Image 1 (cartoon, rainbow, N blue to C red):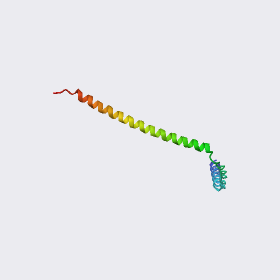
Image 2 (cartoon, one colour):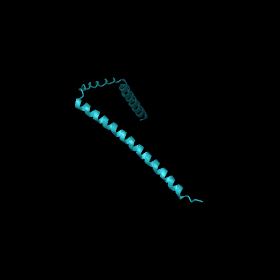
Image 3 (cartoon, rainbow, N blue to C red):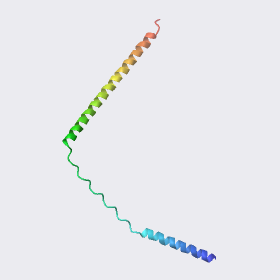
Image 4 (cartoon, one colour):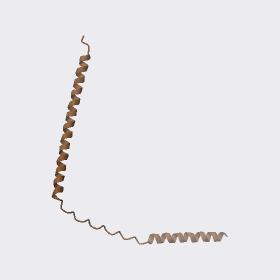
Amino acid sequence: MEITIITLGILVLALGWHVLDLRLKKKPEPPPSPLPAPPPVPELDPLLESSQDDLKRALLEVRIASTELAAAQGKRKARQRQNQVKVEDSKDPII
């Protein structure tokens, strides 16, 4: 009985070794075919180019406006701080 179990174990090990050996010797798969070249880009439509120029101009105007707004807000906050200091000074009792 023990000999049969040992023999069966040796056969299983040999089969496993054989399968592992076959997997290691397996030929590598060929690399996938390269992707086809993308189609050529047609020339930009003049109308599209002009609309891009309009977008760039509008973006520049928005940036300028946001800068002016930030400056105005900064001036307003500075004025508020200055007025607050004047109010606090006027609250001090005169001795």
